[in-house]
Length: 200
Image 1 (cartoon, helix red, strand yellow):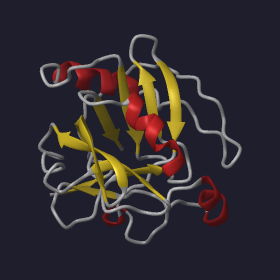
Image 2 (spheres, one colour; image 1 turned 30 degrees about the horizontal axis):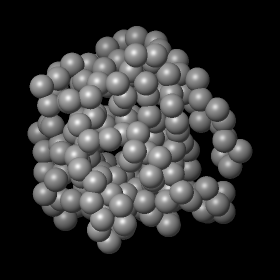
Image 3 (cartoon, one colour; image 1 turned 180 degrees about the horizontal axis):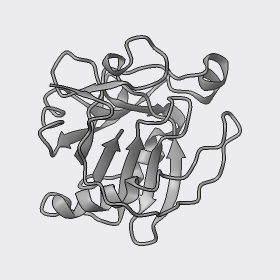
Image 4 (cartoon, one colour; image 1 turned 45 degrees about the vertical axis):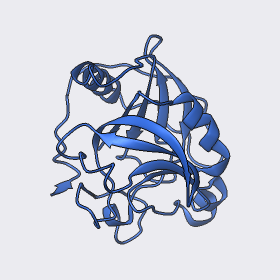
């Protein structure tokens, strides 16, 4: 099922929670996590409480932002503050025209699209992209993530210089692909048994 970017149904709690992050020089300074996203992620954390072993930190991906923006956040739950902001790719199927905007989302095998919703972080392994972390979809809109091999991995097509040079980063096959230089930091902090929440 393909999901239009404006039709994502999430836990929508109207609250304003600004998170301070340091601006990066390679693109326009990224805003903090969109005010509605932190409450949505916390609601997802409560909803999937029995599956989430560690509630100290969550990953939040804001696919309303262009791919040249820092749209992958690690957030300290207790303090409500950002611990780091990163570039992240979306799937080719989410952006067929390669504009840098994720326009559609899918849970279907072979769609090469990103999926939205709540994911449980799994174990790390070494595959064709090197060190990677498996993901388990917790909702009907992403429950095929594991079977689709949707993971967090590093990629040479996600790079600050590329964002400057081309105005966007490359696209994945639906994985949350990060800059290779940031991968170990993210995988170590967003360890197994935590929530990754992606919204649009």
